[in-house]
Length: 164
Image (cartoon, rainbow, N blue to C red):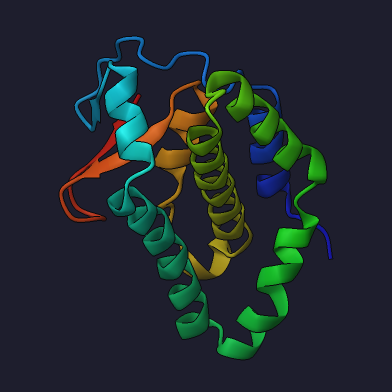
C-alpha cells in the first residue's frame, strides 16, 4: 500500500511551506478568529479544550470510516497509513516547532497538535472516496500558510477556528 496522490500532494505542500512563519500577522477572513498575542496563543494551544478539538476531529474521521466501511478495514488501515507518512514530515514539524517555540512545554504541545492535524488530514485524504468529508482541510491549510491553529470558538464543528 502507498499513499494516494491527494495525500502525497498535501504532504509536499507541507514540506514546501514555512511553518509558523506568519504567526501573529494580520489576516482578513470571516471564517476564522485570530489572536495576535503570542502569550494568548500559547495558552490556547496548550489548553485541554484545543486538545479535545484536535482529538475530536480524529474521532469523527475514525467513526466515519467504521460506520461506512467497517471496523475491520479501519483497524487494518489506520496504523498502516500513519506508518506511510514519511519520517521527514514529522522531523520537519518537530524542527520547526522547536525553532518557533524554544520553551520545551510549548514546543511539545505545538509539535503533537501539528502532528495530529497532519495525520488526521492525511487519513481524511486517504478515506475521502468513502467519507466525502473535508473537515481537516481548514486546520491543515492554515498550518501550511504559516499560522498556528490554536483554538476553536464555539462547539466543534460549529463556530470558528482560532489561529495565531
